[in-house]
Image 1 (spheres, rainbow, N blue to C red):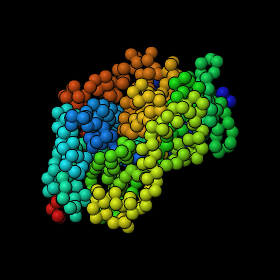
Image 2 (cartoon, rainbow, N blue to C red):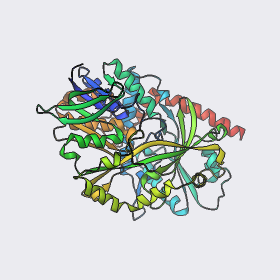
Image 3 (cartoon, rainbow, N blue to C red):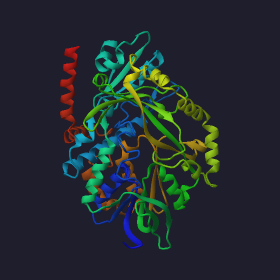
Image 4 (cartoon, one colour):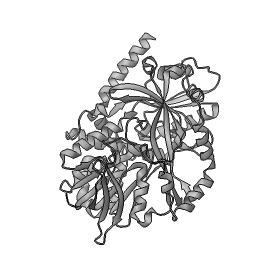
Length: 509
């Protein structure tokens, strides 16, 4: 291969974001040449891996941190609406891929699991009531149920209600339209499809440098980790989808937009249940409310997961700290990200985020007994021997200067950074991340390829019927989309199976 091989598009990182962008571009312009470089041995091994995230199809059905309580007690649902609409976009795109035989067996990456919110205490119950009322006035959430009746809650979440002392107010909401998504499996499916489209996928290849050439292209220094050889690759457009590693490559690009941006790494830990009898008693993703002073990333949840056709149960997340920006990264990642142009941003964040630092220290110091005590707030009779601690993925929260937050503001969402001419884009941040990958990558396309949008729009609408429209404002289209995606992804059959299973459990009880 040429020492200066040239391609149309280079995707750095073989996670769900690169997989989604590559698949979109191959549908829009199949003649473009696309090359992928991934440092690890396979696709979806970092944040996209099924064991490195909670697998929640984030649609704001259960995540209380997406619905902020105002000072007057009312609830702002604008963020929840936005995230739900974005997840609907993902569902439509996945359905298009299945309908056109581009990927197969959707049950291997998406399954029906109810999404629930669970709160304790009179004040939190009132908040949940207000949230329920605000959400169910919106077509996106009309099927949500609310209950503060212990018997009803026993039907919904028997594992959580069993042996619970009902000496305080409790309540929950339930949405049967929730999903569990195996983003690792989906990522691998998409890359298998991209191979059939002639995409050149290079595993065990590390991108060590990136710079602009005099003719406006991007030149990458790529090291083959097996042979040790380094080559130069050029491209018209580069997407940096390398998880926490995106910050380093963005900095190396030298674009003005990379200045005054830093990252704060946080690792995730989950308690995993190993007792099948316990796992069988729970079928839901149940999200609680973060403790006062805790960051949004700490929202506790008890999750049913479907991985490799087996059901498991996870509780967490517990936060950990490591200076690595990737699970398989370097202990020097954080130090190497500090530059003269972002050091004030980083220091300002450190000064402002002392509560977060304190929280992380407390989390790191937790013993298994203390973690089990937190679990017992969800499962009162949880036994130590039934649960093991597992290390999940590494997240890097974006730090940047903003008008609203000032210098060194910690961001908790997903950020896309592009240069002025749209020839390079980088994805930073965390949740809701993978669940909204299609919407995020459509935004990359809109920002980086504006000259093609008019030409591409009919195809985009074929893939995503609601493109350019608000489902909230078009209830008929919403019902049509939900019916279609549910049927195509096999979720309607799963609902019937769950109904039969629930009936059996109640009969036995």
